[in-house]
Structures are given as C-alpha cells and as structure tokens.
Length: 453
Image (cartoon, rainbow, N blue to C red; front, side, top):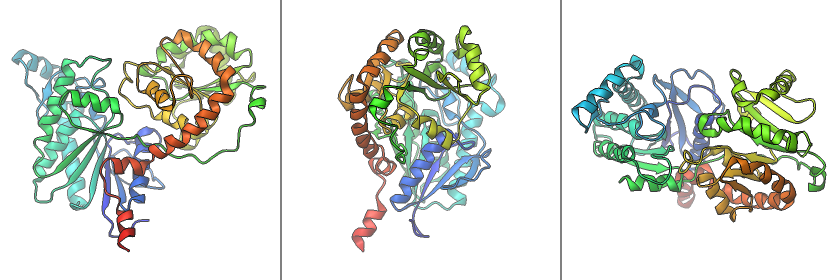
C-alpha cells in the first residue's frame, strides 16, 4: 500500500486504447511493481480508452498511437534520420525530398511532424496538469527512436527548472540477423541526437533483452538490459498424473492472433503435416486463435469444414482434435487458454525475434509448460538458460522438424514437464515486475521506509 503523499510513478503508453492486449498488461504489471516499491502508479493512455481498470488509475490523453511506424528499426517505415520537427535530415537533398514526398501521402494525422507535435504536447499536458515533481518517476512503456524525438521535444519546451527522471523501455529490434544495417546506425544517431536535447532532465534507456541491449550498444546507444515482467499465476489444480496424460491427447497451444512475424505463413503447412499423424490419432490436439475475418488464410482447404464446425460449436471440435478461438481474448479467457497448454508451440520468424522478447513464451514458461521454439533467436536462448535443447523443450531450424519434435515431446513428456516446473520458479523470480523496476534503477521506497522505521 502507498500513502497519500507517496511519489508517483507515471506510466506513459499511447498504445493502450482499450482493455486486453500486451500493452495494457505490461502497464498493469509495472503499476503493481511500482506500488510494491512504495509509489502511487498512474497511467497515461490513448484518448479512446474509456474503460475502468480495476487496479490502475488511467488518464486518457494521447490522440496518436503506434509511434514506431516512423522508427528506423525493423518495425518502422523510416529510411532517414529526422529532426525534432519530424523532417528528414542528414542525407542528400534528393533523399530528403523523396521522404518528404512519401510522408505527404500519409494521412494528415499520421504524418511524422504532426505525430511528433501531438505526442510531445500531450506528454507536456501530463507533466504540467499533474504537477510532476523531481521525486516522481516517469516510465515510457513502449519506446523507440522516433518517440524519443517527441520526448526530447517536449522536455526541451518544458525547460529544466524542475528536472525529471524518465525511463524509456525499448522492445523492438534495430535489425534482423547478425549484421548491423545502415538504418540501424541511423537509429543510433537519431537516439543520441534526441537525448542530447534533454537539458538537466535524466533519461535512462532500457532494453527488454540482452541481445537488444547489444544491438543498441553496437550503434552507440547505452541501454540497460532488464527482465520483461510477467504476471505470476495462481496455481491451478494438477492436470493429472503423467500416466493419465499418456492416455489422452496433449494440448498444443499456439497462442496469439497470427501475424506474419509469428508464423502465419507456416500454419497451413504445419496443420496439413500433423493432422493425420498427430491430431487424428489422439496423441495431440491443437488449440489456436484465428482472426474472425480471413481466418481461411491460416487453414488448409481440406480442413476448413472442420474449423467451421468447431467455431459453430463454441470453438470445440466434437472429436477433440481442435479448439478454435476467434478474435482477441479478455484477460480471464486468455489466461485460461494458456492454463490449458501441455505444449507451447512457436512458429515465430527467428530473424524478427533475434533480439526481441516474447511475452507469450514467458507466460508459458512460468506455467511449467514444455515448448517448441525456433533456433537462433531470443526464444531458443531461453532453452539455453534452462539447460539447453531438450531441457524444457526443443528448438528447430526448419518447421519440417516440428512433427518429429512433437513425437519426441510425447515420449519425453514426464522428464520435460518436471524440469519445466522447476525452471518456472526461477523465471517467476527473475521476471517479477518489482524486480524489473529495481533493475531499471528505480529506488525501492518501501524497503527504505522499513529501514528508517
């Protein structure tokens, strides 16, 4: 519990437009961690957010969101550095003209200069209307190089009479694979140009994985690697003995709505490959989310009637081969979905996740669920931390290997499950939200108060 005059920790995330999703979940977790450290948490969200969050005071502020669309990282569309007004800079005149022309074809609201102006003004609205003080802390939950320009612009206008401490969490990779790209170097230059404009304010940068911190360091940006927080689970009743599980299908969970970087293109082929040998045999069942519209793109033609029948039956296949959930899930439904997993399957593109954290993987690891993940990325790094390939699951270099790995998991399930349960305890301790904030350098006021009493 915090006192009425406790310093505040303001969480800033324009991506929060409604309940559900990982943006709000991250904010909620950090808020809980802040409260346990003795802060009064607050969250500034998008103006469309008009719902009540049971555990967090939310202030609808921002008129723009997804600032990373103009990032120089792999998830953005920029090709040149920009100044604090959003205009391209640091390239040939022709290059700047080309980008300015391209910018002009964006909707007015989403043009770089308009997004920068709006975000910085709305950030200042929070700082001024809420009378932020030096002892308060600000955390930008989902930052990037472009958003740092907006932050720097706002801080420069604010002046340095009341120096603030801001922590910016960076999630998204600068480049794919192993080689530093030209755009990644521009990313570093843009970040350092932004942080040079902040005056007496203190801005601390944090990366949600060690590989991302290394990418940033390679382009001259200093960032602290921090553990991505995950919500501890309330232990469910045991699913039954390993013997009884051997008599029933293991539930493979493919969590999250499919996107290109999360293996949407591989789902059809995989379903075709494991349908007869794994699902119809009763060794496994597949639980997956599909989009309400255009779900057919993820399902092979010969299985669409099966999927239609399951969706018409509250998502349940009468023959217990499938569970099909459509659309986004609220927190309760999502956690129940994860609780049902016996195996977690990840079809993620390893090039995109070479330095990027997967919250879904962490949520399955804290449940003690054996997993199948791609090699050569952050997801397979988590197997290495647990003891290597075969410790709590298996990694693959090609999706063609997945059917055989699933058979191996069926054979090794007792040992894998026991080791995964032991590793879950370590994951929970490391990825606790209070530990995330302390690793960021945010003081633990609760401990200080106990020592003083």
